[in-house]
Amino acid sequence: MQDFIEIWRRVQRRPDCTESSLNEQSFAIDILLRISCRLLIIGVGYFTGITSVWFASQTTTTQPAVQSHEDPKLTINNKKWTLASRPVGHFKPENFAWQEEELPELQDGQLLIANKMLSLDPTQRGWAAHDTYLPAMGIGDAIRGMGVGTVLESKHQKFAAGDLVQGMLNWQTHTISDGQVSPVPDISPLPLEAHFGLFGHIGATAYFGLLEVAEPKAGETLVVTGAAGAVGSLVCQIGKIKGLRVVGIAGTDEKCRWLTEDLGIDAAINYKTERVGKMLKKHAPDGIDVVFENVGGVIMDTIMSQLNNFARIALCGMIANYNAKSPVAGPYSFGNILVKRARVQGFIVLDYMHRAGEMMAEMGKWHAEGRMQYRVDVQKGLENAPDAINMLFDGRNKGKLLLEI
Ligand code: NAP
Image (cartoon, rainbow, N blue to C red):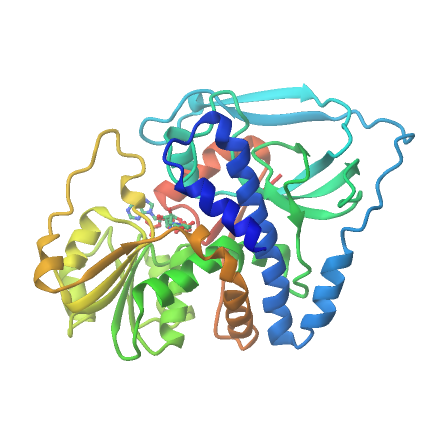
């Protein structure tokens, strides 16, 4: 496992990411997904008391049961969305091209996957536009995205027809993989959606971002932006479990009610209808000690003007800026970081995935105890993907946004 982590670190240290390094980076990510998957088994097993049984079953789920080369050839018509042009502002229809193709026969070492469910993430807007922590998607490539699917045919010794696998399956009905996918763990009785909405990269972002980056202490006041979203709603609940006063900021009354009435946070502010600065003074009367920042922009500025001494800001995302057409000025309250001796730390969840087992154990336990909820928003039909991803940017999604193919 250390080897895999080292590969990721090596790739990550390269500032000159080029098209030719994409395969190596994708390999490293898929390896991390494998590690995450194994750790999920360990974590869930921990709280259910069946760690060893699940781990044993995990190591036997991918025994070679390769479909015979003499089986009749499957003729597959793959449908996919490719990147036609880089987005400027919000994604628009002309950024995507629908293509259909007959897939070639599998080569030795490959497997054919029927994709079932895709994870739609704000970071895909950045991947489509420019280099980020990954190189930009290539024009003409299938839109990059994580997902799960079922193996239809395998000429890879580690996978067999019928296996459920995960990885960078991209926006298409079928994926031919060289094996850079990993088995989806059995998290029953939880549904597959929990793999995306409670655990996985969303759970790890919330768990490590709050507890490791922001270092909250019981009794402090935490403000969460994007509070009703996939990451934000988990952060709010972890904050309550850890004894913090939690104030969430979200974009609709329904989301605010869900946060206070169902998730039990102390107060929620609708940033579209209320004055955030005034409401923060009301709901965080002793000032703000910890911020979990998903949004950036003017909301972050307003929060930064009400920090306490030695406050910590975990900078997880700045979704308010992702669709900006030109560089965004600010933050304007940055001087307050100085006078309040505050700390701002950005983070990327990939740096924590080698420790996903800790998160799986805790989040699974909290969920089993009824102290942790997750909400998923499952859209249907690959043809609807270009519209569905924009739900993240206009706030139509209610929970972890998924696309069922
Ligand atoms: P999400 O919160 O489920 O969905 C995005 C939400 O952002 C929308 O529902 C909308 O909610 C809000 N939003 C969109 N545009 C906004 C704007 N201009 N101003 C204020 N709010 C806006 O998505 P997620 O997957 O959990 O991601 C949340 C954040 O975490 C994103 O910034 C993402 O990039 C970041 N993230 C970072 C990492 C990492 O490793 N650092 C990993 C995963 C995610 P409202 O209705 O409340 O406006």
